Amino acid sequence: MAARSRSRPPGDQKDAGEQRGAGKQKGPGEQKGAGKQSDDPEAVARLICLRQLTAAPRTRAQLAQTLRRRGVPDEAAEAVLGKFTEVGLIDDATFASAWVESRHHGRGLGRRALEAELSQRGVARDDIRAAVATLSSETELATARALVERRLPGTASLPGQARLRRLVGMLARKGYPAGLAFRVVREALEEERQSNGREGRQDGLGVPAVDEDEFVDAELAASEPD
Image 1 (tube, rainbow, N blue to C red):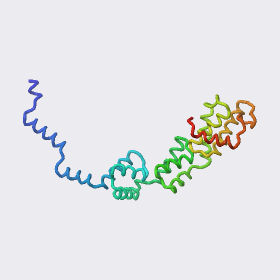
Image 2 (image 1 turned 90 degrees about the vertical axis):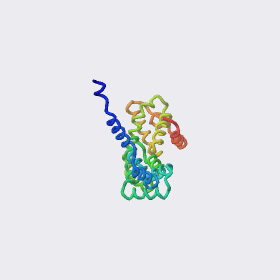
Image 3 (image 1 turned 180 degrees about the horizontal axis):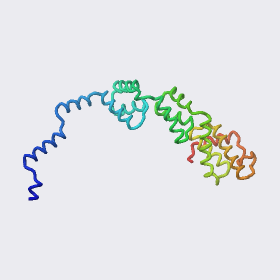
Image 4 (image 1 turned 135 degrees about the vertical axis):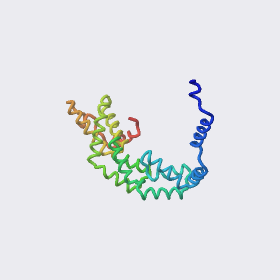
């Protein structure tokens, strides 16, 4: 009885099979439409761009590179990129501003590093200047000081000159100007010396006096790992 109640009549099984097949197979019209879309390079370009922009913000240059890599003809790519720019789906100026805000506050990057990253992503020079200009000198200085404050305890076991090089190199790698980096590090070392009640050596900062050549050496430390 149980076996018979679970079984289906042959007609029902046939109908179920036909329903499953209908769900998997496309009709002639659908297949023809799919073929037309794949033959339309602009349709392909639109789909690629939408998928890219859904995943993360992109610059026009980044999208153009992706389309080129996917084999989309240049004419179709430019047409789609132009339309996307017109309607605001591509906005390099907005991308640059958001990038500066995120990378400065998230990674502590200075203007020089931010400019380099935006240039690598194909942002126009004018848009880069405008975005970086939103980062004030006071904000950049405060961030540099905070970075040194966090790293300073980890250099306590090093000789004074090595600490100077290590900390200036860290700021240089993050895109801070040499003059600012050098000043911030010396200020931090001086404050540490005063708080610990130690006597300074030669220049009163706990590190030997640094001449121009040594300053250049400290800048070259940017190429050394932390």
